[in-house]
Amino acid sequence: MEFTINAVRLHLISMPLVHFFETSFGRTYTRDMILVEVESSGVSGWGEVTCGEHPFYNEEWTEGAWLLLRDYIAPAVIGRSFASPAAVADRLPKVRGHNMAKGGLEAACWDLAARLEGEPLWKTIGAGARREIPCGVSIGIQDSIPQLLEKIRRELEAGYQRIKVKIKPGWDVNVMREIRREFPDILLMGDANSAYTLADIDHLRQLDEFNLMMLEQPLAHDEIIDHAPLQAALKTPICLDECIRSAHHAEQALRLDAGRIINIKLGRVGGFSEAKRIHDLCQQRGIPVWCGGMLEAGIGRAHNIALASLPNFTLPGDVSASRRYWKRDIIDPWVETTPRGTIELRDEPGFGYPLDHEFLKTVRVREQDCAAR
Ligand code: OSB
Ligand code: MG
Image 1 (cartoon, rainbow, N blue to C red):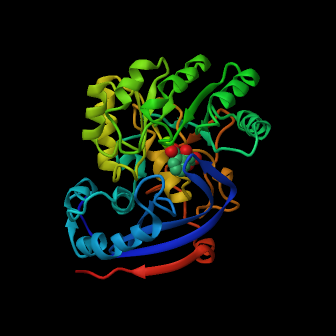
Image 2: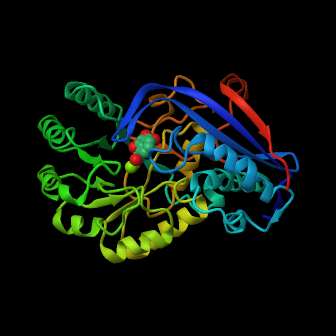
């Protein structure tokens, strides 16, 4: 489906989380997010930039992404024609990194193409291998272990299929021990968000006792190589998140046996084209993948659902119901889960959930029509 981008509009929205979210790198109370709107002959496609408010998960942050999109990415695509959305990522200007900023626009182009074609986004990206995607939850660091156990109980009651808890030095082995005492059989994993080094091998080996599905990104955000000796020392599979930004990185990691599972995040890898390349590579190598989350609002959440319907997304991901994050989401209906802990695909054109434009107006703090070059 060939299309010409007539306009790119950026929307900055700000929404408080229902509950703060704490990882090894800090606490988030409010999400400031960029929505990218790309327009072609009166039809709009939408994407969401998934970076944080501060450059702590990776080097990207909301205000930086805004400038990058406004000054580099948008001017390079306005007025240009693309044979298909698959061509967009390759034809962006040679900006190093900033995958989440680029990925917001790339994803918007896929949504646009789906709408121009009148088909659901999952179909346009070649997915739809399952009608329901399996869901897990990611639970942040809490003020106390009883609070954490209570949260886990509530999520299990809602039907979620696996529990991921954030860990850091001092909130790891002790926490997993208490969780296993209460919930001996649940699918359980930990995410360190780069909080450890190879000097912690003996400490991390204690986690082997808890039959974890995986340990996510224990070492530095930009580290692949050191995960190989760590993996060799652990029974628990390592899952890589931060350090995999391309299919090339995924190939290097698998070649080194630096991990046995990969978390694919649409933004972190720069959009659907690269996400699919990583998915396909992992599928060929017999490596399961799952869809990560970045505390997305409705657009990013819906894009993740489409992505997670590719065939090798066999493990429950971090895509869950809107109400876990927001008092009100920017889409209507919101993303909801079934009692089976799944999210059902929808058949409307594009990402499948109508935007709540009335509500959007109330959370939008800035808007910008980008200039052509
Ligand atoms: O590492 O997966 C991560 C949230 C913000 C930054 C990084 C991560 C996360 C999550 C939350 O784990 C996933 C979600 O519920 O959206
Ligand atoms: Mg992670």
